[in-house]
Figure (spheres, rainbow, N blue to C red):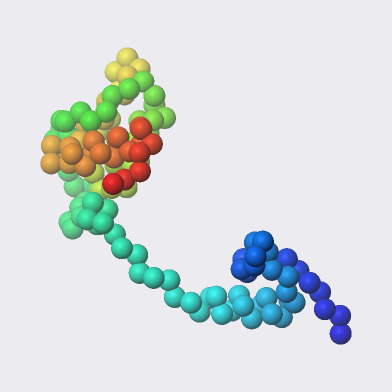
Length: 124
């Protein structure tokens, strides 16, 4: 019987690779698949807001400006980040300038998200 040695980068080894036979590699992969991952811990700011409906709100209620700039791409990214964090917003474009408005109750969370995106600061 001929044995083949293959590099399997997902197996632990001193230099990042492990030499193994194909059968042993398959066995280890099967074992790894049965390991359960630890439960994720979400922080309160990231937890799902109960009753949040992305369609059930009025654009005119978003009157607090949280960002203004010339970059349409950055406005898109900030809008996606706000939506992902379940914050209603509206976008106003005037003379090439983009402005994002949020509901007053979401102002502090929205400003923190904008700061994280614009300055590249990780969440606290």
